[in-house]
Structures are given as C-alpha cells and as structure tokens.
Image 1 (cartoon, helix red, strand yellow):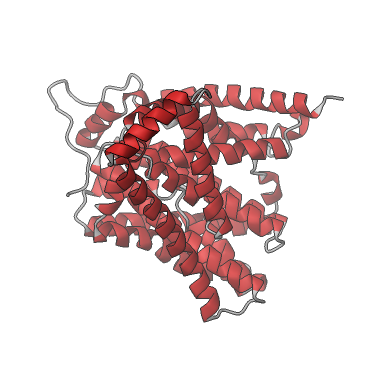
Image 2: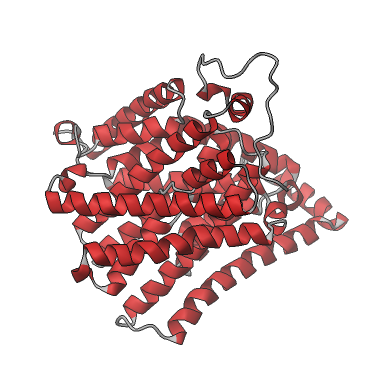
Length: 441
C-alpha cells in the first residue's frame, strides 16, 4: 500500500504533467490553455478514470494546493491592476459589475425554485448566488492569456468582475447571517454583512495610504535601508510581504468575505510606491514564473477533478442540470452583452464580454464547499453547482475567442495580442493592420 506522501506526489505528477500537455493542445486548437486543463481534470477525476487511478476524490493535500493556488492567483491578479485603476473606475463600470451579478441572480433564483420546489427559499438563494458569480481568478488568467492586461477592455472586465465578486460575497455573507439566525432576515444581519465589507476595505486602503505616506519621508527610507542592510535572512522583504498578504486574506476570511477578496486586495495595494521598486519587481517576476509554471495548471486541473458527472446520469438530475446550465449561461452572456452594447461597445466586443463574464471558478467552489460542509446543501446540489460552473467556465473562453474570430478586424487584433491562440491560421491579409479591440473611453 502506498504512503500518503507517495500518493500525493503521484497525484501532482499526473495532474501537472497532463495539464501542461492538455493546455498546449488547447492552445494549438485555438483556445485558452485553461480549457484543456479543466477537461483533463474531468478526465482524470471520478467521472472517468478516477476510480481506476486513485483520483476519485480530491485529497486534503490537493485541496491545500488549490487554496494556495487560489491565494497566489488572486494576489497576482491584484498585482497587475493597481489602486489607480480602481479609483478611476467609472460609474458605468460599477453599474456593469452590479448588473452582471444581480440580474442573473434575480432570474436564477426563481429557476432553482421552479426545478426544485422542495429545496426551500434560503437554500435556493444560496444555490443562486453560487451560480451568479463571475470568477475573478479565472478572469485574471483569461485577461492575461488573451493579451488584454494593458487594454481598456481588460481593465473594465477585471473591474466589473471585482464589483461582481464583492456583491456576491456580500450577499453570501448576508445569507449565512440569516441561516445562523434561524432563517430570519433582520436589519442586524444586513448591517453585519455590509459592515464587514466596509470595515475590510477601510482597513486595507487605510494601511495602503499610511504606508505610502511613511515611505515618502526621507528619515523612514534611511531607517529601512539601514535595517535591510543588517537583516541576514535571504529575501526577507519578499517573505514579509507574503506574511502581510496572508494577514489580509485571513482578515477577509474572518470577516466572512472569503480569503480570495483579501488576497486580491493585498496584490492590488502592492505597488512600487507602497513597497518600493526593489521589492515590487522581483515579486512580480517570481510570481509570474511560479504561477504559470505550476499553480495555474494545477488550479484548473484540480477544479475539473472536483466534478463527478456520474451523479448526473439520472433523468431527473440531468434535467435539473441542463435547465440550470442554460439559465446560468444565458443570463450572464445576455446581461453582459446587453449592458455593454448600451454603453456603445461594438457588437463583437459586447458578445465577447458576455461570454467572458460567464466564467465561474474558485469562489463559487469555495462557497459550495462551505455550504456542503455546513450541511446547507446535499452532495447532489454540490455536484450540480460545481458541474454548472465547470461547463460555464469551459464555454466562456471558447465563446469569446470564436466571437473575435468572426470578423477580419477583431481576428487581426486577436492575432496581434494573443498569437499563441491562432496557430498557423491565416487571419487577415498582409496589408490589413490590426484595429483596436477596446470599448470606448
């Protein structure tokens, strides 16, 4: 019998190796690497090969890897944005982020109640929240892979996804307060959920401004320089930054906002102005290598591994699954497309935006795990939530890339910013210059 350590190493070997191959094949097929990585997780999991290779369930060790991957993924996403982009968020972007959560939630909630009337309103509300969220970690990967990090499109969709996630987490915290109080919604529960969000944002932004103010003083720079020269521990600055970032994640977890919000804001507030370029640049460089070489493929492979589609091989279960997949997909795609079209985006960009915000992921799974652990949802509903999220996440980049390939201008722009997705495909005539693929300023 293999030891726990050996089983863990074998799991990592299989998941990482197969995820890297699957990601490369997906890129050669003109899609994002995460599509192949998710599918390979399903292939190696309980749906197909898992019972024969010992991967029927996600072990505690792999769950820990997924938590670490989620933390660093959100930290890196925040690192790529910066507070100035959040401050510059327009009212239209704020309303866009609110709309792509609350409109799907308002439609999915009665849909869940319709297909499962015995579920109860509170439990149906929990399920609706998990199916209405847009995955900020997945969005960060897609924005990077699609070459949108320095585009207005990328900044808007990341900001909208952040607003969406904060809205979903706040509603989720509110529902947890209601559940803990016996299912009764009161002003105290509502105020607690909103207060927790406001308190967290006040603490992290207050710390950022304080750190910037302190760093601007000459005496402080001299003191820290002298202190750094006496520290013997290697990479002490990086280690201290990680401790502070974990502290932010722990604070948001303690306040009921889930650790992913703290991880994202920790990265958001790490700038050359707040920590100094001598720390910022090495952190950014190391995390890029570490994440894309290890944690990102593992994150998506483990997500696929958590899906057991065998539980849906029953007519009633399959019907519920299909109805909720349709509701989850079309409410997100439709809402995102319509709201951006109203803001006078091009039809191609609007539809691509709708597809991209259809992605789910880490936070949805984290919510589902909390609900399952607390006995709020059953194994069946846990599988439904994760499976719907998996399908939506796979469809999101496929739909966006296909949309952008539908006309010559957007096809040429996609080639310019994400050539790896195009393979050997001839996108545009040689004399056609790529046109901008960004929403209007």
